[in-house]
Image 1 (cartoon, rainbow, N blue to C red):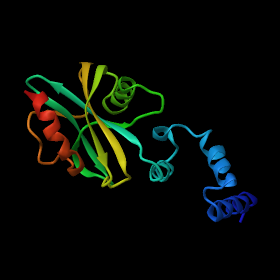
Image 2 (image 1 turned 45 degrees about the vertical axis):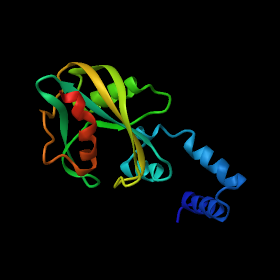
Image 3 (image 1 turned 90 degrees about the vertical axis):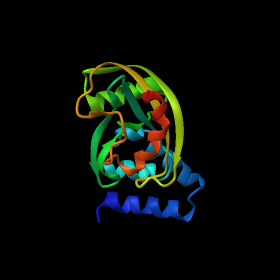
Length: 176
């Protein structure tokens, strides 16, 4: 065991003895303060552990084109499986809904599309989320340009991931 591993073991033991004590509080502050916001943490394992200790806020992005439907993208991961889903992700601290939607759309759909407006149309609490409990804003977004990497759907696809099927009734009124 290296000296760093020994020191870490001592710190962890101290925290476990009194997880809400002065030492533990300061250790949490010292470790968390320099870390980036949750969506930008290094490695999925770090992100998942931190998010399992809190209830992160996510946003699902709803982009609708008249006559075409709602834009969905393919997903394939160990948490939600394979199928279509609404693009989205974690909100960042001190960021407006429009800013987060624009950031997430750039990441998931490319630079060809720009979000010009984002309006929350619903909020869902997901204690059953297969990855970790989260809160989720459903945001209807106005955009310029065309996204890449997905397809438009006027009806719910059979292969919409199970976790997102509950959103379809929310967006149906906006599809007409």
